[in-house]
Image (cartoon, rainbow, N blue to C red; front, side):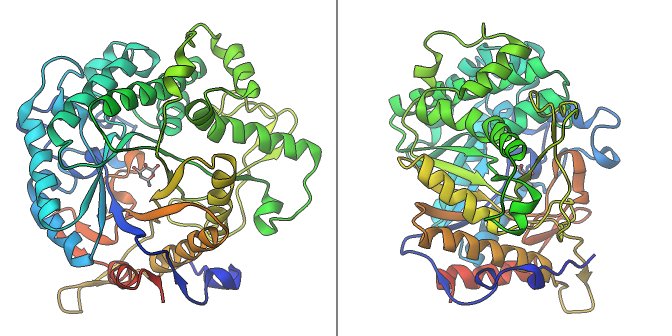
Length: 478
Ligand code: FCB
């Protein structure tokens, strides 16, 4: 499938120079369960994604992360690839069940050894590590004790954060506590599309609170251990009506404005406000109280959650599009969304079916800068899945992924427009370095700028990777 986006974009997203401020950080991102494989090596315990992917019907074609990109064994080759692309930063996650097979107590030093070697390899290549402590692979033992519906899991994350910092803290400056707490809470415990696959509004809302609590507790533990820079990575999207996607200045009815406001509270402010302001929006508390009561929010929690956080990492793929729709039942991923529809946009889409709206990234970055001015921003994921074709006829094989390059280019221009508009954006990381295990979609969706042949583990730079190397050299689009 070829998707042509250019014709539909305003010229500031397709033309002209877009050079970023000096010191801007360029890199790529991955996550442990999506690339490492080796799920039984080195004393690793099972995670919720091992269990979920083995449950029939949960992941497309029954794919699992058992082998994935075999990065656990091929990390040195992968770091060489990164160096060849000129990456300044590499964001990866630590597999909690490698470090603590049961999620608490005894530390498996062989698990830490792997990350120790990886961090050294990156150091030798001059690439700055951005470590994410938790990118969804919860130790199964903790899930068996309640997972994120249990308050104790938040304390366990803080304990684990201290363990990892103890080993890598001499070489790692930037620490991300959590990746996308909203997705984990509401797709993992609400709609059940992700591990652990629970489908219960109350559980999702409890999980959401315990995630922000975990961020606060882990931040305290990391600071006490001397961590320099702390980041929370969120799946933030601008919430808009279909008309606003076409024309940002479009008039919005009062009912639609209420729908936008409510979903913005659920998606963005439910996470950002407790962390950065020490409070939940009243609209969120009302929804939480209705579905879960408020007993799980203890008196001092908001103080514990509201710890100084240096950076918010923004994973942006598409806007969240809503409209008022009286009588609509709540979506299972959105407790409290009664009367709101999530319509599909009539714009070009990626192979995930996600609408391509680069202007949404400018809108989001500017909004975050305005509403939360004390925190720096980083795009920690941005990228697209397309149906890639390997042209073996050309020596060594080629992947002419013009769609992906166009996607990345338009989003870089959107990020640049936000910088020009005053957003405090410090860096941009492509999702992803490698094609990998795309959660419920298995290996069917390829996000990499490097193609992976999963039968042979051959890595092949796609055209988008070569284009990105040029972007890094020029510090933007020159
Ligand atoms: C994000 C996840 C990441 C990847 C991309 C496509 O939600 O953080 O692991 O799967 O989506």
